[in-house]
Image 1 (spheres, rainbow, N blue to C red):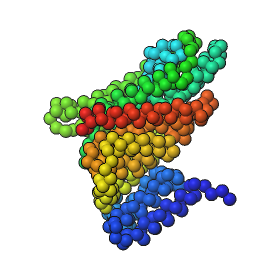
Image 2: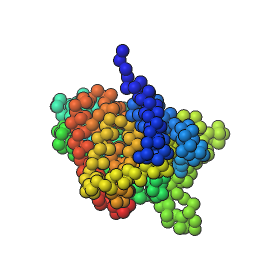
Image 3: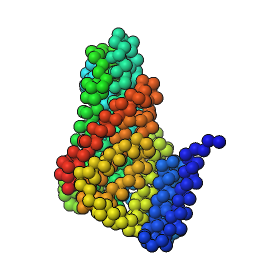
Image 4: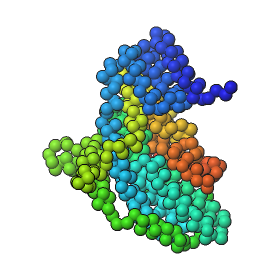
Length: 478
């Protein structure tokens, strides 16, 4: 009988929990630290093996910490209602508004049309559009929307192309470009990808530092742009040159898709205004607060203003129809919000039990150079994210990174920001991230081809993130 990894994890998690509890009077750690380690071991095993849904595993602290006396129920549940949770919820609601009325597709097609109709211009257009949308809506939703349009373009090129190798390289570069751009674009904003939100939550919970939306963009946008340029050059000029010229049929297809959307509808215009005003308030919250005379606006309040507004602005008064209806929220990834809460409760317990200080002391005793610490942790995070969920990995790894930074007398933000970003740089495997899996399903990519491009992007991403840590990250967060 074949035993699955999930089944092993299902029993291994509680077993390690029990082992941890038997060690709580061993002397090296205090009893509370052993209890927290026991809970952490159970959660990590279940997250890695996916023995239970990740969101369900994230609920274990609500049961176990009060039962063990680590926290009261009130303290154990508080992180599940952290402002960071509502920031991401507001971002989800804004993204729902874009998707509900098709505005994201109109934006994507306009961006694709901007870059011309040469083969490489089309690839660049798709990459730019995917990256931009991925800054605001989920990487998965962006890729799902872009793939059918890209496949239509590929079919047109296949019909017209006499250069079989050129066509193969074009299709491969286009598919990989969409997947990689979805991952890269998410780095640019706090709400772009879950690991960013995990980090911001930990910064607030463990370091008592609020990371502003604008400050993150000052760091995230340049890193995204640099990685996007590197990816484009690698795909079109180094590894998969296509040598195809202008594609008039592709231009006709994009124009036809745009014409099919018709004129801007009232709903699209209202969503665009709400979205634009929300982004404006995120970026300029400090001068706006100075103008009104008190600190009304923060990132969470702004996100909720935008999200709630979607439900109250009518688009048809007679039919009592608003921009968003509550049923649309069934598409919200509620499990991610629970995952954030569980991760932050676990981090809070680690700090409460003194585990963060213990990790810091151990690191302080090993005299590693600052550069080596940065290099090792960024590389470990980046290559581990090829094998497991980036959200789970960030949830487990970032508190340890913060402790390591404190033990090595490094500004925790300088180390943890690039490490958190590394969690989203998954380029090698279809299983690494949903965008990779989605484009792999197109049939135009072999695993060996994704690995070949991905290994180069992984190495270059380590270099970019390492350089960013000692430049723009230090300038903004130093």
